[in-house]
Length: 228
Image: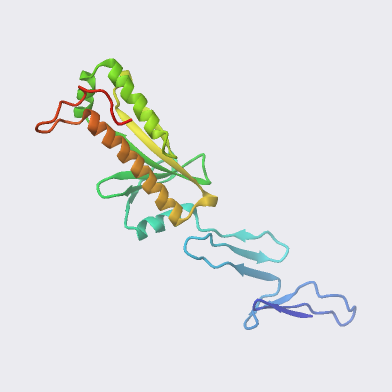
């Protein structure tokens, strides 16, 4: 019996004496024959989709070949020319340093405990100059500023953390998360842009309230918060 499906021809012979089916099928690609007892199936890799191959003799375990999240993400970062370097980090499965936009750095990390996700991180340390101005502000004003940041950041679909001893902002980290089943180049770049926009929002608020005063401007920290 011969069957040719999708360019694959399978022949199952019969033994002449017993008329029992030959247990070893002969498979060919409607061209050059493939050794009896082997089956190969491949899916096309199409712009970031997972590539899979199934190999192995019929009846044996199948070997699955996949393009890893790491390689897919790295390829997209290279295409967009935003990859700075791959950082060696024993605390993660992979860590990429990227620059987006110009002069702004963020990280893409897969933690050891999350094999099916990637984190887009933007950690930012507040400059000593800004912290010195915050120290001069009234305690109630500093507390109001931290609460205002919380409310503003909560309007973005991101996660955020702040370090603010005595309500003096020292560091903040903005994070987005992508699971593997939702990973695409479009989703990755949208996440990077979203994290950058949220980070920029904090920087603008911080500069407006506690930035260094220019000529003719009032000294930062002398007025209440007005951007809410």
